[in-house]
Length: 203
Length: 105
Image (cartoon, rainbow over all chains, first blue to last red; front, side):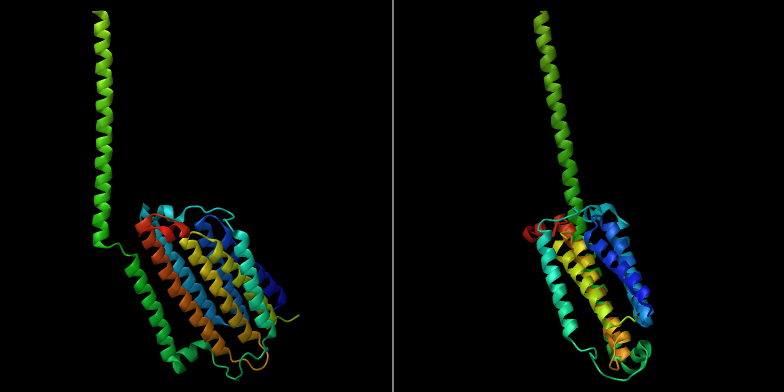
């Protein structure tokens, strides 16, 4: 790979990742996440890992689009995506821990040998997954399916929950009506009292 | 100048540190899930880089397969995290993980 291409893509990956973790609005962070996934996919494709590039793009884009559709479906989750502060409390502690662990990862890479595994195979990932590692591929598909199934199970709104929401809403409306009625009664009493005093004064 | 495994290692470590910072600093559960996604991009970058630029007779399918499984695992973790965040929001109406730790849900 050309070094200029690498540095350009690396700068975009770092900028996108930084935006995901820092930007206060979650919508902007989600856009930055998709953009970062696209750049990582381009980087993978430029390095020669085409199947990884396609997988990275399809899975990240699909997951973010699905989550966005759920969040936009009704106004129930509007508050969940509210703005966060630019710099959270104790951000410096998180920064120090992240920098130290990043350095640790870098040190491990630096002291490791270049030949991190040996072999001379030249098959592509798709042919390996399709012909030689079918069980591993099926396990990956199963993992994704179980994850999505569990997410749907957790995220669905159950019958009980819907009934509870309806009861809470009707109680809120009843309390609101009672409050208004009480205020109207008080206002009428004050008005009656005021007109009675005026009549006594006139008499 | 050719790009070697060291370049990908440095990029991977930076992305890992950024993702970890987001996981530790973000208070919104959806923000934490997105930061986890960034964090898990680090091994994907490292695996792809080591496999396709590594010296010493690297074996492409193995590294690619590991990267593939990492992406699938992070996708499964991500959708579960989002579903949990939605569930907690419906129960507690709080978008702060510190408050969620004390909430009675």
